[in-house]
Image (cartoon, rainbow, N blue to C red):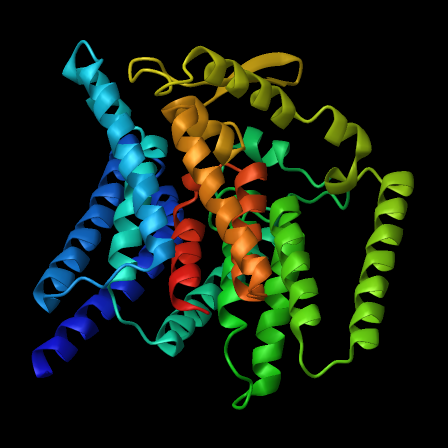
Length: 400
């Protein structure tokens, strides 16, 4: 009994260390001048911590039983590894697969599976994870506000990237935080908010409310449509499921929120050149172009996705010039283009089946989790953002 407690504690500590390290990994790369060697070194540390967590699970001596939902996820990963096996059999030289694995974007697909298995088998205290997130995210928020107020990211992001993330007003850049990406930052802040919102407010209630308010401010300053959409969805569902408010009051609050959002949209579109709400920007968004290119890859390589020796590139127009990027800002299209239609079909069947069950059983928390995943996957290449991905796995498995 003593040994089991010790090993559970070891895995729990390692998970907290892993969360903190993944939070600051981009910042660490920036401090190390964004050299290629620093990126490899940071990835090596992440993999090392994962191996230690696997060691802790093995020492604990038991793997948790699988629920129906976990069996569904495991089946999806089984299809994924079958597709990987078929792709390996089709290669001409081993350098094709090593080159594919060296790409961090591709490594994260396997990385997410390992994290899922590890987090599933570590017994953790919610309070400890929440405390870790509060402390680390407070540090992140302080740095984020300093960067935002000074409008200077001290070399963490290239000048052309900073220019691309201009708010379009106030002569400010969207809050990139320590992640060098407003979308990465937005997903991080919103996942932290979803998790810490589980905490009660008995001790230091006012201070905790201020902390959550500052998280919301950070989410808004990123101008990440995905993160803001997830936050609004979460708040609306939380109001609907509230047991203290009467149905009329809940309907009134939601209606007021919708009206206020509508007025804000109208003012922003008609009076100001605001990136987030610009109707012309939405119409000419590069994301649509990248989605079209992704669909072409899917048509051509529908069975098991693009071969390892073909680098999946989504072309987009930036300042009237064609540039290539390695992700489509849509996780579903990206999975289909890289790994084929059968795999993405399994994912859709799994989501639809569980969403239907959650609605039938009125499990609002499960509905929120599935919808959060769908929104973030459709509008961002969320698999590329390590820490929001890890926090989402923790949120889904440990917070009910």
